[in-house]
Each structure stands twice: as C-alpha cells, then as structure tokens.
Image (cartoon, rainbow, N blue to C red):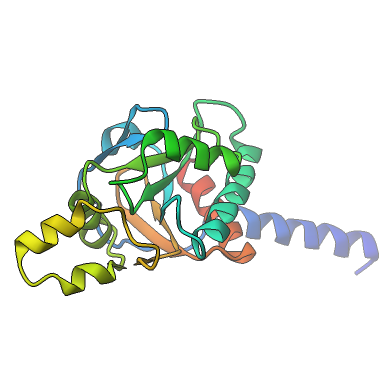
Length: 210
C-alpha cells in the first residue's frame, strides 16, 4: 500500500469514528421542573423540551469546587458554539444553584457574566425554594447533596427554620454534568476533564441531530 492509499484509509477510518454516535445510557426521565433564569424568565421542562441539555449544580458564593466547574462549563459553551453558533441554539447548558435562598437572578447573572455565559445558551436557574431544589437534585437527577447544618435539625420545624438561611459554604454537591435528551431522559453523567467535555460535546451534538 502506497502512502497516498494509506492516508486515504486513515481519513476514512477517522471520519467513520467521528460519525459514530457515542454510547449513551437511559437512566430514567427527569420529572417536570421549573425555575427562574438569570434574566428573570422561566426555565425548565417546558422551555427546554425538544433539545438536549447538560445540567450541573453550583452556587455563587462557593469558594472551592464551583469556580473550576464554572470554567469547564464556559469551555463546553465554546465547544457547542462551534457547531451551533447562533440562537436558537440546538442545545443548552443549565446551571442550577443549590443556594436558591441567596442566589437571586441578579447574582446569577453577575456570576454568569464572570464566566462569559451567554444567556441564550447557558441558563442559570433558581428554584423557588431549597426544598424544591433538593428534590430536583436528589430525586430528579439522582445526585447527592448535603447541607451539614440540616443534619443537626431534630424536628421538621428546626429544619424549616434552617432552610431559610443561605446555603453554607461547606455544602457538598456533585461536580458532574448530567446529559438530558430532548425527551427529558437522562443519557449519562460526565466529568469536567477535557476528555469528559469532549465526550459530552459529542453527545450533545449527536442528540441535537447535528
């Protein structure tokens, strides 16, 4: 085989590999949910239906795990914009705050701007209450979240009183992306490494039919 034929074969193999859809899971359907975005508009099941999205969880005052996750989300946004550059985008990114008592739409907007979030693609979402958010995270996306102060509550009244306070800085939450298809089905979990972002971008593009 001459060099020209070998090069042609490598191109064909590479093209086939790129066109092959990534393996995806079926981890159940996310229940209907609704929140308020950084622009004050509703965001949730109704607004995201028909398009895939990647969702993660942060809060604006988080000093440790959230900044790297936010940077990774910004990197993912740039990847997606390469194949869906203009609104209406074929896929979305969603960050749900785990501190809804403190993270107002204005704070979420400022947080997003610091990572060059485009509100047309990257939605910052705030649930109506901590309890709503906790249910969505744990029962909707099947991810852990733990506020250590709530472990001290001995009664429902004490728990409700604590929930009125801002989320503590030592709150433990997932730093993964969850991939949701246009039908609301969870199709996988991805980390924030370069390889994880590449695989997530490829999955979003595949689910978007691009």
